[in-house]
Image 1 (cartoon, helix red, strand yellow):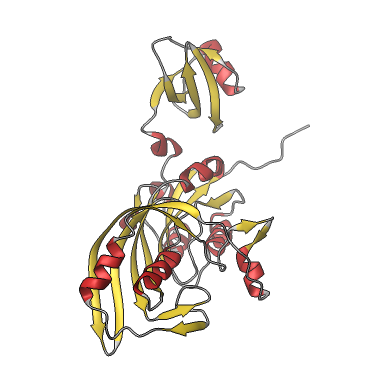
Image 2: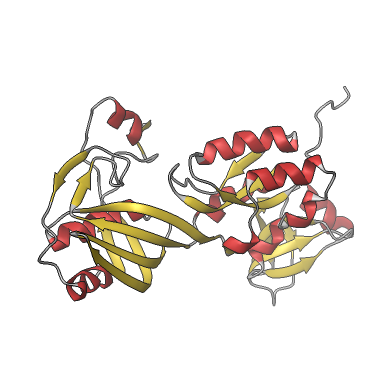
Length: 303
């Protein structure tokens, strides 16, 4: 029978600058229409009110979305002190307010810095995290709040801290580098709790994800204009193997190439050890293989 399945017109990672008001899934849905393809997936949820870097996987690159989600991220956050909300940002219902008039800039800065390192963070109710197969925000919208287990996260660094004390309001602006699974809203909540006045996130910009910087990204309107005007959107798509450049590189041909195309094991040089990017005789990036003691086993296929 003939294969009527259309090939994906694009493969790789498209660096998108998500604008305010869009969910990450909104971005994926709009790109499906703009690029006229179905196999598209994002690399990690960014809140609708947040903006910034959202790497989007196209075609065969969707196979690597999970591993890209695991990478560190960098944000610029504005935290408002003295207000606690159910969403842990300024869009939510105010639960309580706290007195900030006695707080000094030094005290706030010390509290912010104290979270550098690993700590156990309780995820927010308004999040896409699943418990027993149901997303937390779905429960929250039903008025249900459940106990959440804390997750170990790592705040790699906090820098460029600016304390703004004006008009009886207190804010802290800072850049934070963190591990996967870190909720910046919850970090603001925890800083506010430590100061005893409460706190929530006022605004958030993701400036780096999957090694992609903000200035490499295109907005949805820029992508749409490029495609509409006949531009080459491929110039902006990052090849899959770019994200595995820390792995070794191995070229195969002949019988070994046939084995790789089928995802089979193959014999390798005993001097090789670790994870390798495997390329076919035509230069195409085929797969990741783990090599140990002269045997190469498939880790992830990209054909």
